Picture (spheres, each protein chain N blue to C red):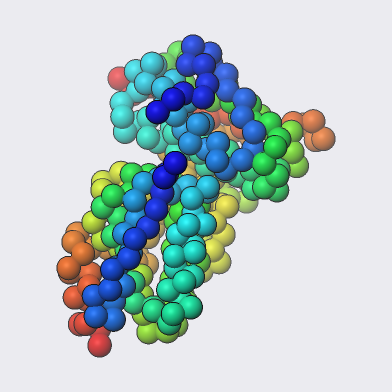
Length: 117
Length: 145
């Protein structure tokens, strides 16, 4: 059963991570592994596309919290994009828009990294 | 997808594996729908129950996957009441009441985020524990229309 999976694409020095399915306490380790493997490869500039994410619980949100500082310490970031309304509402309830850059589309999020240089 | 529970019953007993969270969510979704909640309200209720059960698995049962979680659902006076019982260790939730989100993110106290969500998404969240016997959480949400 594929409750949740991720896929990746490189655009220059930015890695776009696509989330698909249901992100809960059971599937959060899949996202942790994805982020860990990027960190191991010294890839710290991430755009996470949540277009195909149907569900997120605090266990999923915790993964973003666990990695954001690591990325920023290494001149990178985790920028979020394309989330549906219900997923955004959960991010919003927990104050994420104050601490994370959230974009309507992937292209703008990727471009923001080149603007940061 | 096949159902792994009896939809005609108002009670679900599952083992404390995170793999069962999907079953719990399906069960609550079906029950809340029969009581007439809107899809937005159903999503809130489902997430609150997921958070409650995730906390039980992690904090009460310390991620042991083979212990019982009992979930029962009732509907009275326009309220859905979800009662969740476990037989693990009692864990403290009262300190999670007031949440400084920025501090929270800095400290990464993820377990507490679940309690904050439950209290935000439901009308009432009530924990009671009988030491060395059981812990109970009652989640209540009023039907808006």
